[in-house]
Image 1: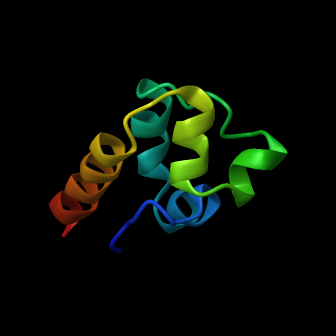
Image 2: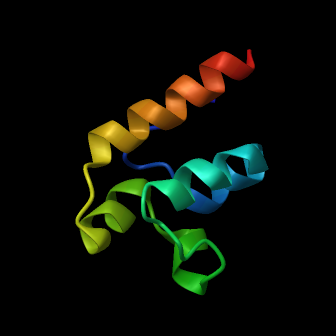
Length: 67
């Protein structure tokens, strides 16, 4: 899976639940909230004041390492 800023958070977690610790460690502690499942990564990063590009890179690195 290739993740972009426009990828829905719920889709990423459904693809591989192992991504949840990355999201939690980066400050997205609301994975269970209704908004999280339909928000894009960029929207969530804006709300939480996070560096979206860094998070997308970390998520893609995770998926790449999984093979």
